Amino acid sequence: MPAKKQLNGSADEVEIAFYDAIARGDLDGMMALWAEDEEIVCVHPNSPRLIGHADIRASWEAIFENGTMQIHIRQLHAMHNLLTAVHSLIEEFHSKDQIAQDVHIIATNVYVKTPRGWRIATHHASVAAGAAPADLSKGDVLH
Image 1 (cartoon, rainbow, N blue to C red):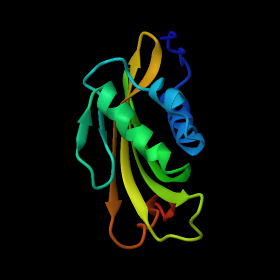
Image 2 (image 1 turned 135 degrees about the vertical axis):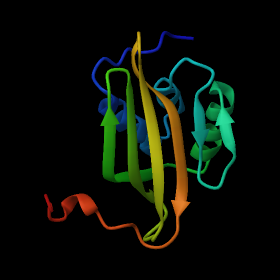
Image 3 (image 1 turned 45 degrees about the horizontal axis):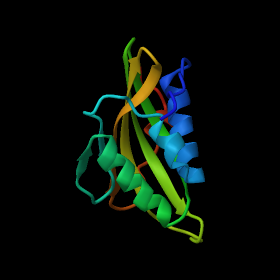
Image 4 (image 1 turned 45 degrees about the vertical axis):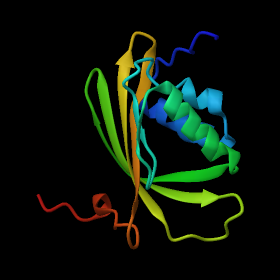
């Protein structure tokens, strides 16, 4: 197995690479972004919690067998410190054969800084009912 590429930039760059790998259906590229720790966690919408590389890899492989998909990030809220970053966001999901869909997914991505750079520790996504919430960050500031 080749050595994992070091990503020294930021958790934001890992997140961009994560969604790019999804769009391309790049399983190896996707898995290279995850922390080497076997305690990594992934929860897909309406699915059980997966722990560890083998289960997470198998789930993404099954997803990619159904074709590629575009996920557009909306309303990113990020919290960062020196070793951890937590991103809460809304994913707009579009599959390649889909014309329009009123589905949005609320996701939380947790990144950890390792000796080899930033890596994904947790991806948790769930389908949210109704229309996507309004972006409150664009409203007027009260104080």
